[in-house]
Length: 157
Image (cartoon, rainbow, N blue to C red):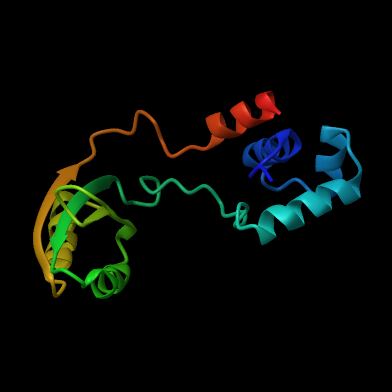
């Protein structure tokens, strides 16, 4: 069974653009029965594709104007412990286990350069973090997105 079909993709595109739409309005706009939309939403949720409808927040507008990325080298076999410690740092937004030079790729935010130094100091003080390399993002020419994948699926099915 494919992960998504065209109706799933069109429904997710609609909810991406207007996350506050109700099931009935989605059905009306997509030209299908309300029960079909509800069944699709239930299935997408049960399969873990649709995780919820969080608001799209602008971290800079919230006062976190700096975004930085750090590649962390950690002690072997300590990924779970280091990840748990990093998740306790409020400004750490994402942590990805990676291949290559480092072991973890961390996205973090800060209010100022001094605040970023504090956050980096917290990160490097985590037990079993051996080495870090941090870069500050200057801009985000391509923000996180899934729209192109949904649009392709909507066209292909």
